[in-house]
Length: 109
Length: 115
Image (cartoon, rainbow over all chains, first blue to last red; front, side):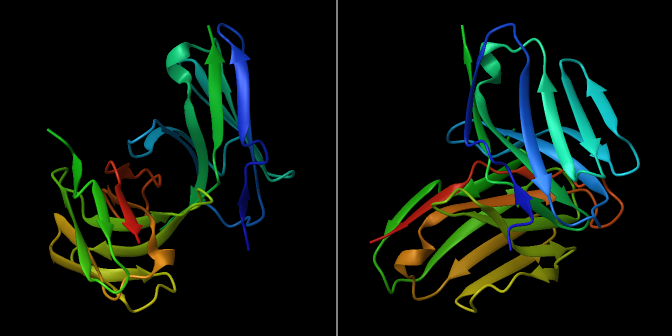
């Protein structure tokens, strides 16, 4: 019963261009939607979140979009930088977080 | 200063053994968690403790026993290890159980390999 799906296991983007990571969910009862970033041999670190009552949240180069009717979450990174190369997990939850399987983003210099 | 620290970082052991992973957070958070990342890269919650009290237990075999001696520590003990227990185990903490944004602070992970 996979409630959260990241259908692209990997994505390569040229440095300076926009990276778009996508996530689909099935459960509509979540209060918060989050993106985490993970480097090899490290734990996930929080990147950005959005409340279920909003449809957009922006923090510097990172913008998260929430489309509740489509049950779709996306993360836009612009401009993409080499340091953005990592695995990105979407996560949803209230008292506990349910994570997607991750998308490996590679920024090509 | 590491906010959430886990030991050991790597653990290789034989089937049937018992092992423990320790976790400590110095963030003053009330809630701590154990997550498991399996070979398919799913990050799944196992347990959650709030102020030393078990809050979430996600259908984990009773060979897994968490222990929280105080709110800054959450240890994971695993009895009779099986091959399928091989995974990366992440400890995490958050400020409160309810009403927060869901942001978790993760440790670096403990990679357990069962031979």
